[in-house]
Amino acid sequence: MAYCTWGLDESSLHYHDEEWGVPIHDDNLQFEYLLLAVMQCGLNWKMVLKKYEILSECFANFDFERIASFDEFDVERILNTTGMIRSRRKIEAIINNARAFIQIREKYGSFSKWLWSFSDGKSISYIGHEKGLIPMSNGLSERITKAMKKEGFKFVGSIMIYSHLQGCGIINDHGDDCHRYHELMSQYPSVRLPCEHEKFSR
Image 1: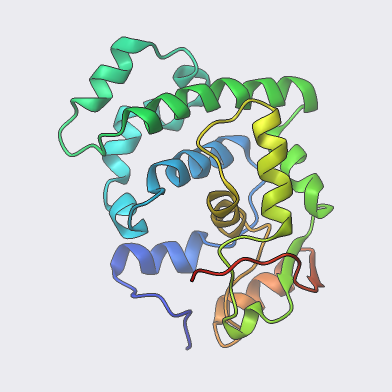
Image 2: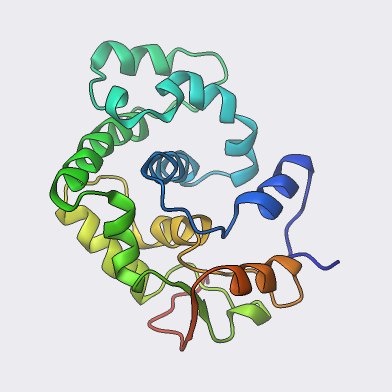
């Protein structure tokens, strides 16, 4: 059984096999993934996974409605939590994003519905990605980033959003020698598309 080129320990193995790339249409999970993506910016993803329980405790089990009501007291509480990633900018952005998230739900009925509209409701497998030619961002993540910023989101960029699109299944970036690539392609509505405006690390 082949895997993507991850350094797989127990936590990341579970994430790879059970969560990464699986299409999600649940707003609660979408917000949780976005929150984790904000906290991961500039850090190792494994670190974020290992701090999952602390993050859940600090952010009301990822309940966006409760987080939207957080104030300065909560910011200080989170900053002073043992083991927490101490970044005031990220914490304040997450609170702001919870409020923006609610506004999108009020306008469109569902954040997931709004986000999936960018891919016509299908998981995208970009030609060449299955061979490991995976960018940091692309045209789709840039368009969604601009749309999210217009809706009031903060601390979002095309690289972070590309990562989120991989995580929530809008982009399937498993390798074709990985069992999950074929499972996801066969189980969910999918489309193969040419690459667009891709940016790679230097």
